[in-house]
Length: 194
Image (cartoon, rainbow, N blue to C red; front, side):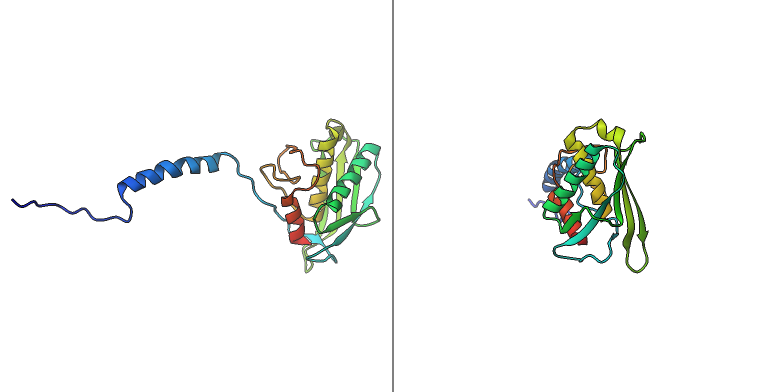
């Protein structure tokens, strides 16, 4: 008695293995797409002209304008020291310069804001940057969140943009992640510029 059989075309992967892959990979894919993955540093596309492009260190002068709150000035100084004391290739010095900082008594929807006048021409550099901290918003925070907000605005003033997932002081949401100094991701962003 002869048996006739119909041959099924061979696929590169059997049904059993396909099912197994789906069972394993589907939960992994679901986890990755629903948990808000952290993203690495982002650059704004500008840097301070006349500073080194690699190695230590870019000396950036920070000019203190009017500070109505001595606490805000102290917090900004601590934020500058945190950046300078980190492995980032920058040294922030309280000297006259085109990076100015001050606070305002106006009630604002933000804790801090950074405004800049870029030269997008041949240099792709900042002409000036102005950082403003809101006194009412700062007063609603504890010291560590005030310092984190100040480090965040100084990060913008040096050329790095928002990140997401609480991986550093450059967090782009209204969340304070508890950083007392720039994270390794923040430092990597600065060191990509200087």
